[in-house]
Amino acid sequence: MDQNIVEIWLRKDPVRWIAGAFAGAFAGIVMIGVSMLFMALMGDDIFAPIKVAALPVLGASAMEAGMVMKPIVVGLLAHELLCVFLGIIFAHFTGTNVLSALLGVGLTWGIFGWIFINNLFSPSFHDVLTAERSAAVAFFAWVIFGITLTSVSFFDKLFRRS
Image (cartoon, rainbow, N blue to C red; front, side, top):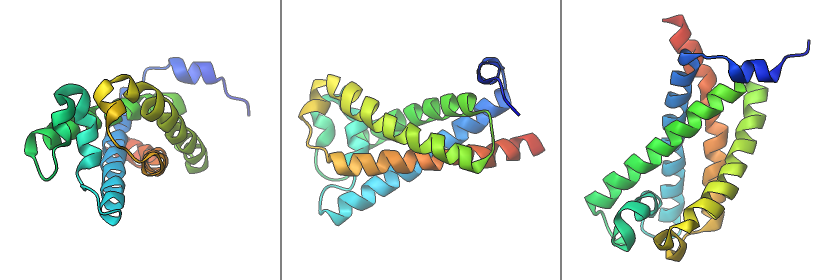
């Protein structure tokens, strides 16, 4: 059976958008957790992945070593807001709860996030450009983010059941 993709993209489904917001927030937490684990294994500041998200707001001072609360809070808030936004967009444009389809789109979504957000958009902020960031860790984290967005299926089913 052929489906009209444009029809799926044009429909208004607030329940799906809310499911996408939750999936984005969840995927963002998983992404940060994986990044922090890799930073710990590499012997680096484990809060660096969170602090990088605070760089556009706080400048270079966001990367102070250790557990400095202001960059961590600002970075986590900025990171999660972006992830929620990306989750809503992902949920809107997928329009399905079929895991195999979500997995393929999620993987693609993660790779495109790494290319466009991590490598093209973020470096437009001078402080982000000059920060020492691992492209390999970022790639792996973005792929994990995209794959974890498949949780939109769980949240969609959960919210439609209530």
